[in-house]
Length: 185
Image 1 (spheres, helix red, strand yellow):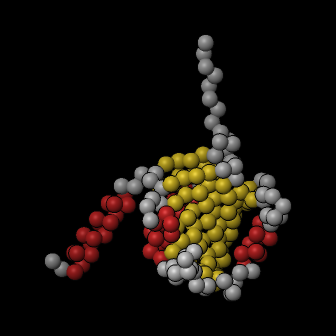
Image 2: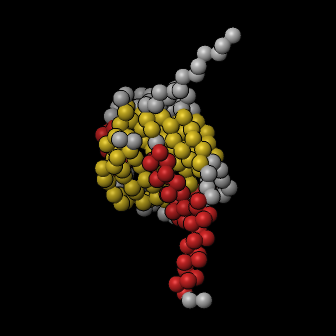
Image 3: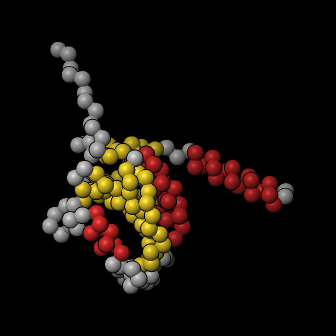
């Protein structure tokens, strides 16, 4: 079999596996946002945060979060202050890979990408496979902003990045919750 034919078969097999992924939809109970994410990912949420992680060991190396800001007294007061706090970590802890404008759900957002330059270690002191990379989207809304972030290590990060892009593409903010029809007696 020729090398190009083998590459094509490999690509087709991988593409069919990607197509097999099902998506779940999560809509915040208050109507703050709605997103689609891989249905096999673990989900947890609170009042102002949604956390997603791939199943199995990959979930230890990759995290996807969506958080509403500002919150509490320690939180930066503005989206610009939040971005500034991220950029203050360059170059001592992180390298800025990109800082570009983005469109998220029809809103002018800011997309920052970083690669950590510090050596990462486990609690036991063992070196982690790295480097840690992250993409951070800052999305303005009426009373604050959302931070949509993917952080992870190595190949698991690369595998999760398309899912992050899908979540961002399908995101809706300040969605009104569906009204239920009153029950008839």
